[in-house]
Image (cartoon, one colour):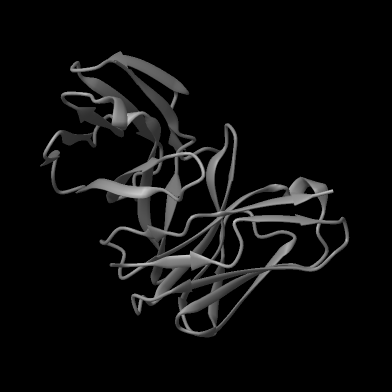
Amino acid sequence: DVKVTQSSRYLVKRTGEKVFLECVQDMDHENMFWYRQDPGLGLRLIYFSYDVKMKEKGDIPEGYSVSREKKERFSLILESASTNQTSMYLCASSLDRYYEQYFGPGTRLTVT
Amino acid sequence: DQQVKQNSPSLSVQEGRISILNCDYTNSMFDYFLWYKKYPAEGPTFLISISSIKDKNEDGRFTVFLNKSAKHLSLHIVPSQPGDSAVYFCAASSEVSGTYKYIFGTGTRLKVLA
């Protein structure tokens, strides 16, 4: 049974804090993705990675960075959290372009 | 610039009837399309996909139709069941600098009434 896990389901942080969101997949997938989901905006791609230590900016990378030191782990970093980063964050992985993405359960982040 | 659009934010259908969810795209480079279903407090789960070389793909109660000339795809659910009540996202894929990414629509909330 394929699995993508995210370190926290709910997180509350203060403005200016550094925030780490961790994602781990056990499917040996090359490709991993971070999205945020906001009402009326759907899922928007923040960053993706197609190999260890490789990363590509998605559509809304500003205010975020990522780290992929191991194949199974892809971390999203908010260097200095702001209230407009309050959102649901979703991690996904996929084997290949023509295969579906598997999503984690999401982390609901609130920045106060 | 929203490259993938789901113009209906919500849809209500009676149990047993057909649900039709629509999706439009603007980028002619998209060549692979997927539908996902999302329940509250869960990640999206894959439903069905279609390649641009096809115009129809079927999997049980779910059928996806692709009209390339109109840049339009639709998901048909027949018959609709109360458990189908969820938010549905369409996604489109294209190759980007030797790799790929998916662009998602804004979602349609389907409510199936018992």
